[in-house]
Length: 119
Image (cartoon, rainbow, N blue to C red; front, side):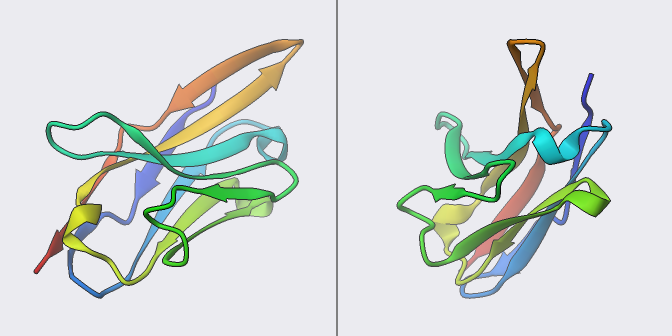
């Protein structure tokens, strides 16, 4: 069982920056593929960014050049650095872990943290 706890959400003005953190439990964090997803009111949850155990990253087109995902394996934490925020970035942001164990894949989600971007 992997527990994920997000933090860092809040209200920010358009054009501003915010850093989200996701602390994970588990002894094998460095082997987890991690990601950030978001869900705006009335919309489906969508991928924002992912980072592999090896540090490879992938971003949604809507956040490329503005958001950066990173991880600190010593702290069991993944970050989402959000810059040049827009009102369209308003959503609940969820941390996700993709855990491979004994040939099986397990998905874990955090409880979410609200980010609201004001004009």
